[in-house]
Image 1: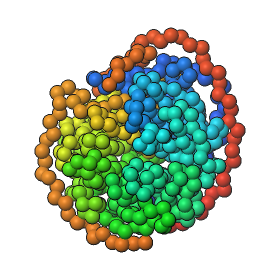
Image 2: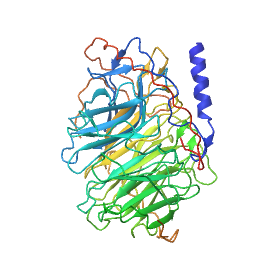
Image 3: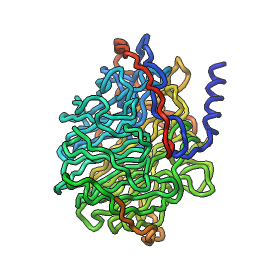
Length: 547
């Protein structure tokens, strides 16, 4: 009873956690707990959670395909082999025990389109790693960028669909910094194969400046960092079909889209020749429904379909609109190479309700130009915090969006914290011509020894028409592109049942395993990682670091 009262009080307190600006000083990705020794490793059936026609499959499972009781996994990014959609890999933050905040670079792979996943372990046992970002080039080679406790990074490469990884340089030699993201030039231009990354100012070189780096040899070596104009942070990068690089993120007030036309020229130092202010209809936030983390990042992606919408630049983020403390999923686009952007458009189609959250919004562009967006949504929750994964798509460059569809059961985002009050900072999706492949974290599994659910990583396939009748986009006033800033020159497989879940959309219910799998012996305990010492705290210059 005491435990029940305690966890109820914790959930209530977290539900009222204050909102904070990501630009203010908050908890960083840092080594603050030693590795936790695992005395035993219990298992339960892996979670397979159907919701309507959508099925979520647990990815962080043991060698026998069972759920690992007592661990946590969150902050997941997915890569898909464009030459064989059955092959995918997900990277995540792996907490071997929720009693410690010590995390490592976890990953899983699938060879059967996401029905079954293998979790071989972590990138480097006993080494603190965070902020996983994965990507694939056009031939199906996967890359995994991982942040160390020093705010420096490593790039890993896999040539077998994520089954094994090769570290491309010694620890910390990939540069970078906190909230790093990277992209790959997949065009046929002079920058083919180049990799580009940006981070948020809490950087490896300790300058406190939001920086950009380039690799011209497939992620092996990285050139010296370069300051990015207007310091766009908590965002992503992409390359258009002409090889131009675009970086999206939030500055200290508005959002920006920054272009480099010569980053693709290997013998030139990259410069940024266009900076455009973008109105996203609000600002990024942290806290509230995700107490110690972001409520969403800014995602930038470019259409390379070769059709009428080719080279459109799109930006999407969960933002806090003026006068609100909760978030909406907002979208803007550019049809003129990033010179101007449309007015912001709200993707979540429920009525405005200041008590509801639409958070962790992310999206991707399919090869045929369709846009797929997913996010966590509390519209169906009586407590305004239990969340479901929602989906919407657009076939007209984001002018209109389909009726929103819930694609997962509801889950409590406040449970299963690994001694850190957040469920990560982002989720991701990669689209193909018929649908999208999503990696997200949820708390469907229940841990009876802690009397709460656990954070785990899931894969789900989303697709147009999955809500029953094909959703019909509701026309809205077409945003008229306006110059928000003058560019300025500056330097469907069928599930194999191992455990079936009863999915509901109620405020408190989460998926519960019902099928009885073949019993397996509990796994051999993992090797205890060697504790590492926390580095001496570094003074942070202006601007202050983000979480």
